[in-house]
Length: 198
Image: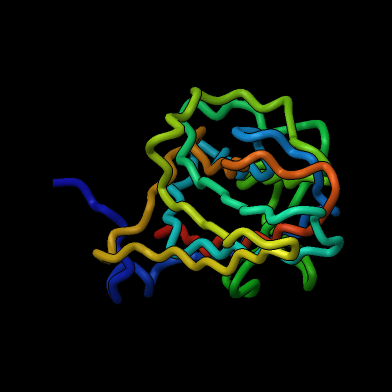
């Protein structure tokens, strides 16, 4: 039976940890099913990337004119050969313990050749290449109740202790699930805690 990279002492003692932290621009008028965040595990010579937790936050900066529900779907994406390239900002992960990585200087981050991420500016992000995801099978689903100033506050961790594992050229994509109204805007904050067992 293969190793599932569970967050147990034997694995974590040899793990190199990372955090991908991303903050969107003032998002508005984004269509349902549009991508707003992408994260790709790239380096084929490295071990698989185990996702231990995902954190989603939404803050409304400009109220919507009518009650607006917000919902974000987190999907595992396969065949992820190109990260998004338009409509947002590249994000670079950081080490949980930098001195664990030989050859890095103070302030260095995880090379974009290992983990690559991208988050929305004001609109949907595009340009990624991955196998289409099923809308009815998200890994996590975060919802904010209908309000002119809706919020989302969601934390995902695996209930059984088995992390979500991303092999090379697999990743995470976050999609808007409900059409976002044109009058109103806010920021999405995404945090992904992950590790590789060395």
